[in-house]
Amino acid sequence: MSQNNWQELEQKLFLRTVNRVPLTLVRGQGAWVWDDEDREYLDFVGGWAVNSLGHCPPVVVEALEKQAKTLIQASNQFYTIPQIKLAQVLVENSCLDRIFFGNSGAEANEGAMKLARRYGKLRLNGAYQVITTYSSFHGRTLAMTAATGQSKFQEPYIPLPDGFVNVAYNNVEAIKQATNAQTCAIILEPIQGEGGVNIPDDDYLNSVQSWCREKGILFILDEIQTGIGRTGSLFAYQQYNVEPDIMTLAKGLGSGVPIGAFLAKEHCSVFSPGEHGSTFGGNPLVCAAAYAALKYIIANNIPRKVRQVGNYFITKLESLKQQFDFVTDVRGRGLLIALEFNSDIAEELVQACLDKGLLVNKVKPNALRFMPPLIITEKEVDKAISILQDALEGIRNHRH
Ligand SMILES: Cc1ncc(COP(=O)(O)O)c(C=O)c1O
Image (cartoon, rainbow, N blue to C red; front, side, top):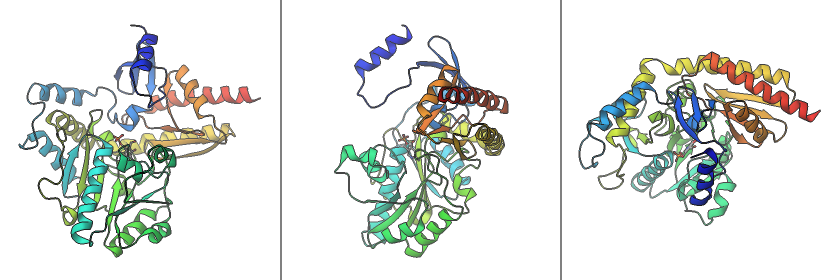
């Protein structure tokens, strides 16, 4: 079937939730993908910050093949080994003590909110409210829509579930003012991803943590986008000298397979059997893949490589900023980077890059985001920069 037929068929069959880029992807290898007409693209979207080790990484493919021939799914009524091995690596390499596995980021955050509410009920006289921030993104379930402090996601679904208070990001005073006897927790992204790669002041997370300790409420970090090496350390909290009480993960954790998790410190691990669950969560097939990916990431110190190649990329983007006066900002940590402009040209740039063989994300009307596989090379960064430079030149010529 030709490219157009797939896209026409999609138009007929799907609920209209997304305006897709007109590109049908059929295979991938490393940082590269190919469409159904065998054109190749350098992939700086990376499955939306998911393909940590690139497309079809051999360690993950091998783990999947082996596990698929052994045990694919079993009920969580029983013990299965891949999820226990994965849990051990995550607990040993983080400041958290216990884990629960689900299938996505939204599900991880939902679970974390339920744990916070249990904590509120048992330890904080029934407190149930969670403070979240504007420009955050925590997922698409109804509760996570209420948690996500962006009106464009909330408005279509009002009335939203109760229990979430949205306040300004990077502003500890706003959190203090919103805290009351009903507050059981605060959830934050260490760096806001979907909101535009917003990096808080160096002391913000630390101040929020101190406030949480003072008030006895839970400090929850959503590391769904920032975790698993993305920002140049295994978890972003490690760069901010804080320790969350609860942390959520998904995206890069499976290097392509769907998995989510939340981890908690012992003092707030307050669930009792039957209070939470998931049929597929911790499924042996995905856990075997995630275990293989995570072992590889740790053994090869991928976070250090992310820092190096991320800094190289940022330096190159800074030089584009020098060349084009309509580029107003370069910001990011590791391989979570944004390039901002003084007008809404991101859409046009995404298209121009696509035409030249580079996939990038429009994170805001006036900003691009780059979230490539963590294993990209400087040579691949050079290629992306040269395509971006061409695209930016196209815009400049078009303007004059
Ligand atoms: C910080 C953060 N939290 C939660 C989510 C939701 O994850 P999922 O789409 O897997 O439900 C995302 C997805 O972009 C995210 O970036």
